[in-house]
Length: 228
Image 1 (tube, rainbow, N blue to C red):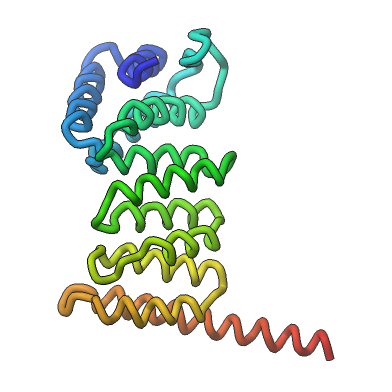
Image 2: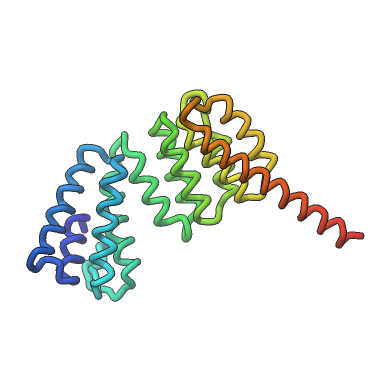
């Protein structure tokens, strides 16, 4: 079932097609059209996600797009189903990287390998590093910081990519309790940071690394005490 059809169904089930709330459906159609022009319009994706969440929270059932039969599901499952449909519709376009990020975000908990493959494809479609930063963030937030490190080390081009890509790599290293990797990449990121733009974020990262180093040292001392 196409995304717009799912959105309409969610709106009908929640009563949003009545009265002034029908304007929300029109807004959803406008945002979908914006994504037809630019499948990597993150603001449009987020706007549709908000609409879907609002509708799903008031809806009782939604049709399964594979069986076309009504199926009882939670509001979050309904919202995920709609966003999956949207991302899948757009992901086949050769320049579409953000839809793949969304598909990975929705599938990472149940299929981390499949999600990682989608993230790799997204990264290969984007030269700016935005996809890399978003991909590492998806893995970090799902509890796969080590996989985020591997992705970052494999794809990060500090000379030509945005600051956020290196920043997410460092955050993944901190999440994984690897201050050595965080420090090494912080030094690289520092070399390519834009003066007057990144100082605050560098200072924040430096503070996090110091905390991570202190925690690593504390864990080492505790282990030595247990062994002795």
